[in-house]
Length: 551
Ligand code: CA
Ligand code: CA
Image (tube, rainbow, N blue to C red):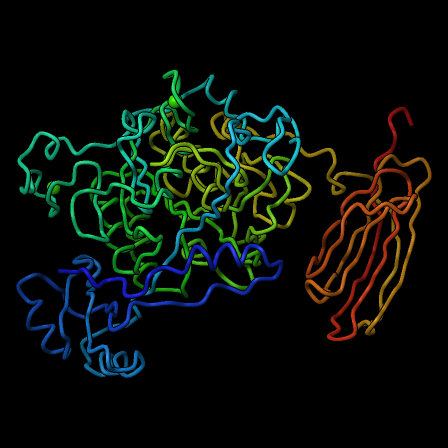
């Protein structure tokens, strides 16, 4: 009946990989299912009125997406332009709003080399893939958290993704199961929830009761959330014990449509999920998706979402669904095993809440264990922490869960002004409701002195300037920029130590930020612009320094 939902085979994954490879990649292009529109009706909708509604909308077909939300999927003649169809629907006078049936993509970035260590959970400095050695303890403090709780089978996490391979030995014991369907009759909606044979969840791509994963992404996310722990097998999830509900809305090629996303969210809410893990994104703001997330919030269900893999500042250019301003949304950025924001990760000092491990993350797939990267892989770490938290404190509201996760995140200098919490999700401090220790390498906490230097505003083409600051006796030194703006990817500020060794380079916008800290008592700041496009430049208004011990 709905075999032609996704007309175009997916290009999303290839596009995402390309996007991540480019330092200043554009937001992925907007795609929608041809001829299909999401329509919010003014009047109530139900199955008895659908035919006449379809006729009054001059549609080739219509289906209910959300009865409660008065949302329909309407199919118009594909020969019409989208603009014509949308105007016609609006002009009918029957509808509140009309949106294209947007297509979303999985936000993973598959990575080939096999990994065998879960540095995100327990980081002992082990070497990970191409990244080299990690920073010990740069993890979510899972080991300490597990001494408090390893989760509960009363907590249900809906993985809204490509499905879940519930046959994987590490996932099978932690699958949510609809008992009435499990013990019911094939072809019968035994529990009367409107879905036939939905034992482990539902497949909104093929519209059947089997959410088996034909891609791998959803199973990978599921393993990070809740691969069975202490079973002498495979890996372990953040929560050893949890119930994973498989809601497939992304196809075998990793793409899915707005109507399927709304259906999946509504299913999760109606069938007892506590948390939804959403490692996908794309497309502009959608009222229908926003309202589905609001319905979830009202029902007390958290919506944890990937911040995106196109290196954007989400405060300035939103990524959906992570940017919907609803209390249950937690937007997640990705870090590597040294606590650095991943080069591909989106960020945002107000709209992205927390960072989590998202580079070279080993987890379960239908083809065995794979190591992948992406904000897709960071998101399930936070979903897992939320599951542990709810196991311990089942009465927390989604707003309280978000507040706790932001408050208890472990601050990291590199994440200051990049995420609202300035830090990395921390399972132990979330469970104990305690503040994590500050980052002693964060210049924010160091003694500071006034200092001044500015470029021309705007700066010149082919600039090549150098300025040096010294604080005698300092072990580390950094400068503070009150304002910083260069042409992203072309005009650079390079930070060097006294010997001229490069420590870091910046390009783009970094207002009210400390520079990376440089070892020693001297920081050399070089500014090099190319032959076109000039921006504001920068203003330095102070230095910060860490004094050597014993001084
Ligand atoms: Ca059913
Ligand atoms: Ca295991």
